[in-house]
Image 1 (tube, rainbow, N blue to C red):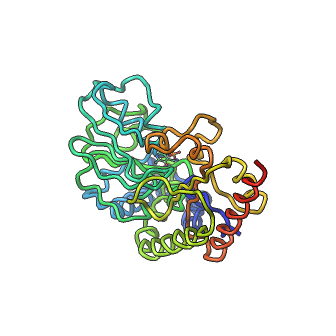
Image 2: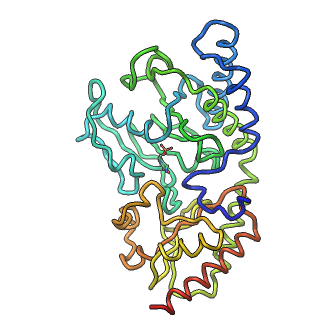
Image 3: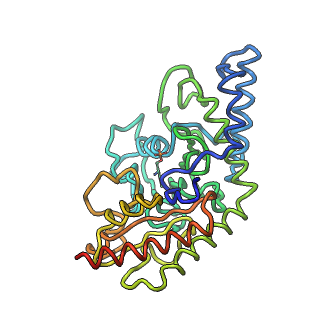
Length: 337
Ligand code: PMP
């Protein structure tokens, strides 16, 4: 049923094997991971395993470098909040959780931070790790493309982009040098208090292990689907791919001259295809995408942009059909002008 869901950059469905691993921690093993009785220890062990699996996925030396958060927004802003805003350099291609952060400083401000998104969520563009003290937003790539945390100080991620549950993520921190984000029970090495979301953490760990084991085949599938979609648009005129040459196969930002992207999306939705205008979090915003502007995309083309993002539930047939539908709808919308 999800073969026509092409909005995997907004969020991915939870892998059923992930749900299987989570279920006992919602029912039979409800312990608080801080409790010292057997069910508490059971939960604690499950959290330890998840931390190890995530550390393995991203090549972290020590599992204690993984600190669980509610997701990449929180991870990003925790790091930013520790730095003097005047000393933080952000690229114009960052996710809104970085671009729009403007908050009080947490603790004593640190100096000098370079922030760089690894894979842009709107175009799939792959960026290099910046030099110096850095925060790398790896949310769109972790578990999908090979990634190693070497040369990173902080790395943010969210489980729901790699077939895990929503509302759970992590911050990789090379050393525990951040001021605590939340105070209280002292969970997460005293840096992020609050009762652990054990089922969510277990799900994140399971998703990380599956992402690690099945990365090569999933990557091959996404590459194939990406090529298939582009080949299927071959007869359509006046369109472009945004984001330069070095792109992840999971995301395609496509602009069609002379149409409104919104109209195309609605027509596609009516025919059973879920795509998006760009970042799902900004889809209620009518301003042109700051990221596409930064890429130098012509304003008229920005208006005619959709994002297609591939995942493991998409089939070749659904992708071929999506290309046909896009071509037909674009032609129809142009003829109505
Ligand atoms: N960074 C990037 C690159 C993202 O794509 C997202 C999710 N759209 C986030 C951060 C924020 O993740 P979350 O909404 O799970 O906090």
